[in-house]
Image 1 (cartoon, rainbow, N blue to C red):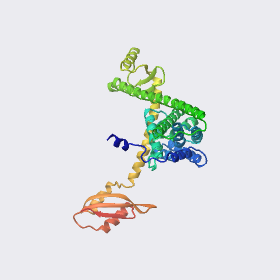
Image 2: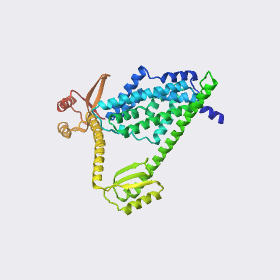
Image 3: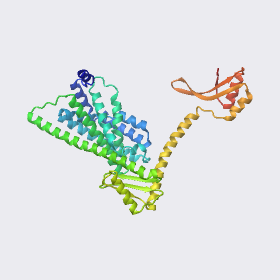
Image 4: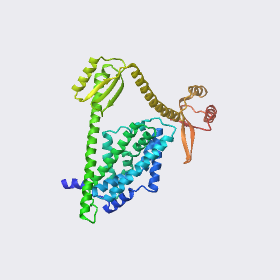
Amino acid sequence: MKKSILEFINLSSGEEDKKKVLENVFANTSFRGSNLWILACAIIVASVGLNVNSTAVIIGAMLISPLMGPIVGAGFALGTYDFELLKKSVKNLLVATIVSLIVSSAYFYLSPFKDVQSELLARTAPNIYDVIIAFFGGLVGVIAITRVEKGNPIPGVAIATALMPPLCTAGYGIATFNLSFFAGAFYLYTINCFFICIATFFVVKYLKYPPASFKSMRYARQIRLGITALIFIMIVPSAYLAYNLWNEKKFTKAIDQFINTEFTNKGNMVIFKKLNYNTNPKKVELALLNRKLTNEEIKEYNRMLSDMGIANTELLFRQNSEDLKAEILNEINKQENQISQKDIAINELKNELDKYKLNDPALTRELNILFPEITDISIGNIEQHPNTDSVTIQGVMLYKTDKPIDEVKLNNWLKERLKAANFLLIRKE
């Protein structure tokens, strides 16, 4: 039973020849000629997607991006102690990163539209979920690379691990001189690179890829010692990073629970909330709309925060009317920006629906007078595709009647009344 289960989950089944896999990995690490042009074009496409807040365009850019190559190459190099592959992978990853930052910075600097959209904001604050996605996305990617049948996971990995959007957001930060945007986005990009590389390293070790051969045993020992040290240098900070992001997530959840319990659920409206996890002590800034607190009350809330197990945290309240006014205006501007985006989408959907709807109460009343024998009416438009290159709108009327009617007269009246080229009449049984 145990043997059959092990065979069922065996990664060696369907594995590509290791030598051929390594050759493909080595070839895909290069950033010259067409790869460099593809990268630059993908960066432009992703930057436009972030600029106009289009998720579909961003996904398209991630699919055509060749950034995964040198990262996977570095993981294979670490797993096989291949110093030449590691040197090439790191060099090409640096080239790709610098080119991407230059192209995205130039685009955002020249673009007349520099508003901060939700797709941009989403790439400025990495969390524990980004670590999980990068690690398991990297696992899927390298498993797919080592198969004879590559299948369709690789495009999905390119979308899930999202290397391109953080780089473009970092370029936006450079173009707009916004250091916090650049730092947050580049931090997310670094997280993705590290954990994809580490996931690749683990799969390469699990599949027992042969180590690179060296002419001198002494040189081989030096290379292996150096790469082993590099692996620890990568894994230890990455583990600490994941642990820190996990703690930050727990801290945010605990603060939200405290605010809901002590303020929101008791009828106090919180109009401003700012968490600063990286200070010592951690700081939580709040502003209440309908209540001003005394110093004793503020001390009591800080004590309650400590009693809940949220240690080394200071609770601050903004109660200056000018500060509150500024924060309220900022919040209103953010809400208006979000609402305007939703309004645009809603209007587009309404316009699309209006093409197929015929809402005219007077039309129904006139039909009842001219054709009283008709008892039930449904009128609308449908699309007709006579060929793949054109679409025409066809008016349709469904009707019910117990007596025969003059359909030619009804059709002529509808065409004249609705200024339509033709109408399709369908009698319901």
